[in-house]
Image (cartoon, rainbow, N blue to C red; front, side, top):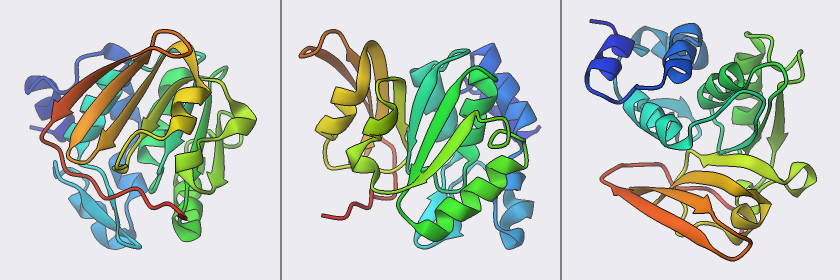
Length: 205
C-alpha cells in the first residue's frame, strides 16, 4: 500500500483537494539526494541544519485542520524543504498566494529550488522569504490562513494580528497542534490537539 493510500485509509487524509495535492506533489522532490528513497516512510526525515521534513501524517492532519481553499492567501512559517508550501500552492491555485518564511538561509534556498520544480515561483503563486517567522510577514497581511511547521512556546501575537477575521491559524505549541479561529479583532477560539512532536521554532531573540 502506498503512503497516500495508508494516510487515506487511516483517516488522516479526507478532503479531495488535499488528497489530490498529496498525489501531485511528490515528497521525494523535497528531500536531499541521500534521503529520496525514504520518501514513502511515514516519519519525519532530516533535511540538514537540525531541521526535518515533517511526518506525512502530521502534514496531512495540519492541512485538514487548515482547510486551504482555492484563491486564498496563506502564510507558511518554517517552510524548510518546501513540501508543505508546494502542497498549499497546488491547492490555492493560480490566483492564490503562498508566502513561505524560513529563518535558515540555506534551507530557504533548498526549499525555493524544490518548489520551483513545480513552476509555482515562476507563476507567482509562491513567494519565499528569508526571515524570522515569529514576526509573521506584515508586508502581505492580512492572510486568510497561517500554518507553522515548527513549535513555538506560544502563538506569536503578530500571527493573530495578521490573520483576517474568519481566518485560521494551525500551529504547534509544545507537543500539541492548535487550531485557532479568529472570531473578531479580539476574540479567538482555540482548539488543542495533543500528542505530536516538532522541531522548535528558531527565532532571533
